[in-house]
Image 1: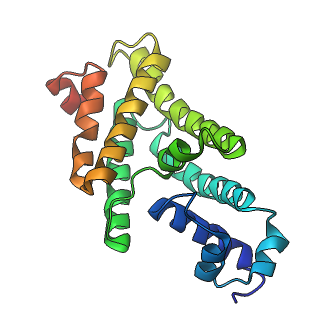
Image 2: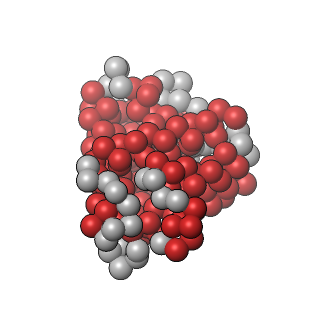
Length: 204
């Protein structure tokens, strides 16, 4: 068993990895405890259910991710460059994960969200809230690019939804095909959605 001081974190790490590799439904508390090196009694000391653990793990992962997104989408970075950096960062993360896990994992939020959306309202609501924050980062970059005359996008929210759907679609395709190189086209595709011409892509 892990030290009591890190048992909670071990459980959250374990459930994140098991769900991302497999599925929420197929992951059992016994499997989580085994992977975490934690006894079942300790599990129930920290969490009432698998759902509560998954919710805590989602929040912890988001809090770790948010500083990265704050840096990528910093107002000090030119708007279109924020989007390019976001794409490159996502690609590199998936490459690292494939090297570690042996397969392309895609987006954990979409993978889990698609599974639980009609089954577990607590997790569904939490995933929607996190995805909404991702959307806000993208929308802010589009809004700034429009304001600076780089693109024509008076309705930044609509463009952001299109870009988010496109990027998540590529992540899902990369997982299905187990091919991380699918993500190479994300940046170019996003610039196309925004109507940025080739010369503009180089100059922006």
